[in-house]
Length: 391
Image (cartoon, rainbow, N blue to C red; front, side, top):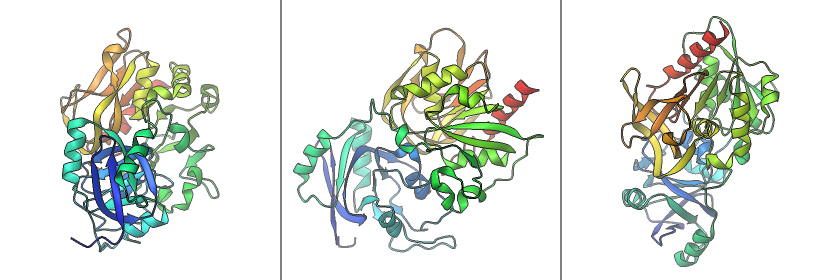
């Protein structure tokens, strides 16, 4: 183990403290401590807007060995509050690597810590549940940091969507001089990984409501021949319908879905007018728009190895997930919504379908990034639904 040159402290709200080595930027951050079980894809995780408000612990012990690049970003910048590692690789070796993870942390002002027993931390979070945490490279006394942790804001009841959504509509791929809330500067965000998939017989116009959208959702739609327009989370239903879209995608995003009341109202006003697909937070917002409730999971689902069963085909998919809330299915009034997918670890709802309207949703991420591609077919399933409505 390398000798620490800069000390950092990670403190949980129950008083548990971990001393480690500071890597990346100096500073002090607070958020919910969560663990992610993915073995690769740390750059995609860092730039996933759904992690706003969270300090992420990677359970895989060796992180940073293949470096970072301009192509594997999922948004315009990193959104995690902090990053926890067992060991930051001192060497970045890959033909696609453009800089080290440590340098990336510093450039983007990400506070991170390694030389932490991430196995012990993960077991604590599994047994006691997600809790608030503080990560500091500037506070030498963990007891003083603990008090600030306990005084920090809760994610439950917090609307974090407004902090990550785009400021103005944009097309995907971004046009010259336009783009992705300034994300167009990342050269790959528009062009690379246009996965070879069958194209639709005609362009399908899709509006994506940006609650914290990952670029790979946009890539997957564009790769299937869609003309994609991304709009801010606060866009009114009338403004969306004025664009005459063939379908609307409700994206992933951070925070408590029940706090995003303006989006719930918009979704209700879109129902019956246009086919919709909800992904992650978008799925939860649909559950609330149906009149149901959401609840907070004990430690959430974060990683790329979560088994989900498609109840129609009985097939099991290994999926990418990142969420702390879930839909309480029995709270949805009436009998117009059915469960389509189920989590095989804890039985939570992973997919829903409206029985009268062309609306489907998934709790997990069919676009992955990072993770397995088992669920990527669902984009085509949604586009087939759209085509059927407009046939």
